[in-house]
Length: 67
Ligand SMILES: [Zn+2]
Image (cartoon, rainbow, N blue to C red; front, side, top):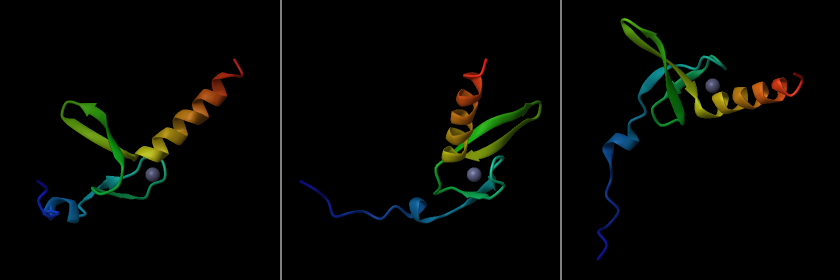
């Protein structure tokens, strides 16, 4: 038995998270993003779009083939 699609208010809320360290654009909570530890004491985070991080990762892999 399936219930009617329930509205999740949290998903509708697009919250500002921070600035992407790669493209410098704003990240909102409905974007696909990752939080990276910036400093441990006090703990702060930096944020990146998942896609930006993935692109950066790919670039590094390409670089390493020159070694
Ligand atoms: Zn980005």
